[in-house]
Length: 148
Image (cartoon, rainbow, N blue to C red; front, side, top):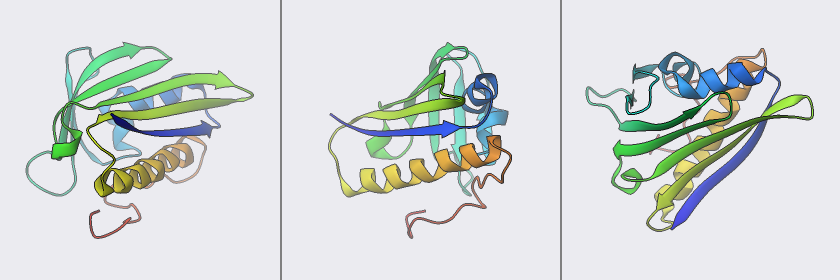
């Protein structure tokens, strides 16, 4: 199975980075402003991008403060279903490092490449927002293509 992987260093405390990945309020500051859900294992995070129904719903399968957040996609784009999204977080060299993995893609189709670019963009949005700059969550994000 294929996976998207990214690594980003953020000039922010590890607890702040963890909260940005683990809570609906944190996610709304860098990915999409349309987030619903809670921060507990077995709970769900639903994200939207301008339509009445959520674009994706993820079950929270692991919360290990301040080191790790894991979601399993329950509903979303067909290629996302049953994939896992992991944020491994650690303090290193004066910054907080996020190693992001979106694993379990059935095959590396063109849509996966688009999503890789989008994930990279939104991880940079997180970096900017937590490092004292401006985050650009949806709908303020740069559009990668007509796919979003």
